[in-house]
Length: 74
Image (cartoon, rainbow, N blue to C red; front, side, top):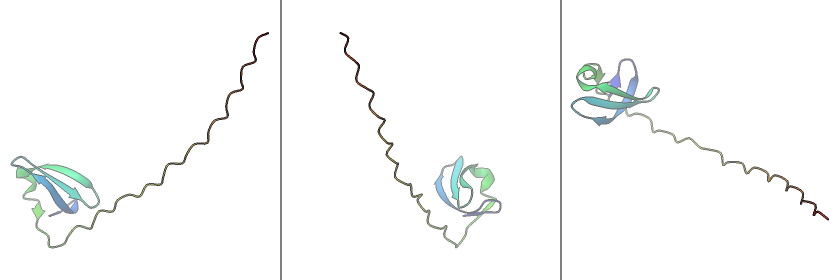
């Protein structure tokens, strides 16, 4: 679907009351169905495949130096 303001998007879910659409540049938007249906038009274009973010592995924190051993009382 294509919205005149948000551009190309894919319908994620729809009910009698709401439509949830994920847009390429604006993320997920939830609309009242009876209002947004007039603003949408069917598009032959397919939305681009979502790229998964690659996360860097967490760095292992250096071990804290051990506390000195207590001195025994005499």
